[in-house]
Amino acid sequence: MLSSPSPSVLAAPPSLEMLLAAAAHLVPCLAARAAQTDTVGGFPTEELDQLRTAGLLTAPLPLADNGADLMAPANTLTMLSVLKHIGRGNLAVGRIYEGHVNALQLIQRFASPAQQARWTVDAQAGHVFGVWNTQAEDGVHLQTLPSGGYRLQGSKTFASGAGHITRPLITGALPDGGWQLFVLPTDSQPPALDASFWQPLGMRATASLHADLTNLEISPEELVGQPGAYYQQPWFSGGAIRFAAVQLGGAEAVFDETRRFLQDLGRTDDPYQRMRLGEMAMLIESGNLWLRGAADHAARPAAETEAEATVAYANLVRTAIEEICLRVLQLAERCVGARGLLQPEPFERLHRDLTHYLRQPAPDAAVADAGRYVLHNTAPAYQLWHD
Image (cartoon, rainbow, N blue to C red; front, side):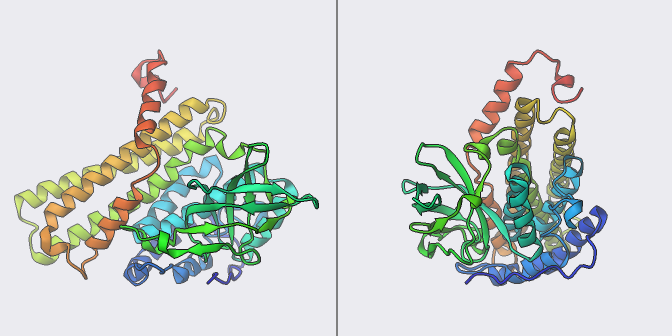
């Protein structure tokens, strides 16, 4: 069932500092409820209501629209930190929220002023946005109607939030082969959902179902940007820093729970546990430094014009944080042993969720692209990423 949106109750938009504090404050609440929605068919509806109340769902909107301009390049570090906190509380909520902020950013970048105004009203009314791009052989096509509108044919896979979010931003093929973004109002045009597709290792609560859009119809006013806009660089690949931030939040949750587990058992004097926790702390801080570097790189004046450098650095960030998370998981397993991997301890769920969420598209191509960039560059190492 689609979640019923409700408008934010905030009288005035929160500052960036307030948003960051609110995200950190929500972590215990998100973590406490994570096990309840960790089921196929579960969805963090109440958690999204908490984000809405805190002003986090409207935070990506511009200041003029009572948002916090969270997606402005100068605010990238705050945006990544907010994503990390939410991922620390619950990776599934972090995944849904990352899709929401991504969709609103794409609308701000590619939609017309009239479209932006309309979807801003929707965001202010409490609608949750998302991005559905992945598809299999039966992918989405737009068929032109005599009225000038479009009839949709085909399906999306991994449609996160399907049945719950109400404004997914979707990609599909035009009759001439162009790849077109459009917004589907699923509260009035609900796709046919196949929940049997979503039998995952982890991230169950994201409801990333198979969504069949066949015979749904949209107007030209739902089309966002020109064909091919979605894949424009550096924004397409550069956006990897957002999911990397959520992933690092998951690794921080693993670290916190591992330390709590060892403290409860009185194992803090064990030299090998100290060695493992020391390495985990080093890894987590390394990830935070990567996020800070990503924010600095995204905020530089040449971020758009030097798209290759921006994408290459984002690929380094996602690769480094993936490796950090994998190592943190390995060390945590050794720290807690078989006993710690039993329910109701949270490690089993945290391990499944983070392992699944780390499987992002084309990891080898990402690091190879960074290698291509540096091999075709003559700047010394200390100047590759920093002027």
